[in-house]
Structures are given as C-alpha cells and as structure tokens.
Length: 107
Image (tube, rainbow, N blue to C red; front, top):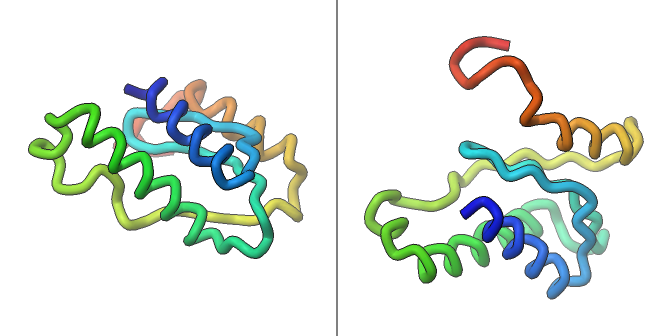
C-alpha cells in the first residue's frame, strides 16, 4: 500500500503542477518535500494530498473504511526551505528509515 500511496501523491502533484523533491512513506508518517506555487498555502497543499489519497485508498481498499475512523490525522508539519538548503531537507527525508530509534523508545 505504501507504493500505491506514493503513486497517488505523485499523481496529485502532477495534476496541480507541483514538484515532489523527496518523499518517504513510513508506517506511521509521510515525509513530503514539495515545490508548489507560492499562491497555494501549506494547509491547502496538505489538504489536497490528504483528501485525494484518503478517498482513492478507501475506494481501493474497503477494509480501511471500517478499521480506521480517518485515514489521516488532522495534523501536519509544514516549513519553508530558506534557512537550510533543499539538499539538507532531501537528505533528512531520505534517511528517515535509517534512524536508530523507534517510536516510543526515545530519541
């Protein structure tokens, strides 16, 4: 399902004319580095990705409708790249699976 989620994220980005610089789909979170039109707010971009992927995945995988009250939480983190380089952000996302700690075990 992670591969399908990434495909859907890329499809929505293409539809909107946005560029996905880096993406990492993990079991409990998604890291997405997106270059988008400056007129689009971060909340708009996040909601476009969340709404589209939730709708399609729930259609394709009906068990998601009954097992989860919502596919996405209402929260997200957004930041603009400026103080750090785009390469730094991309390296951070690319190395998320390599982190030695696990959820609940501290940092």
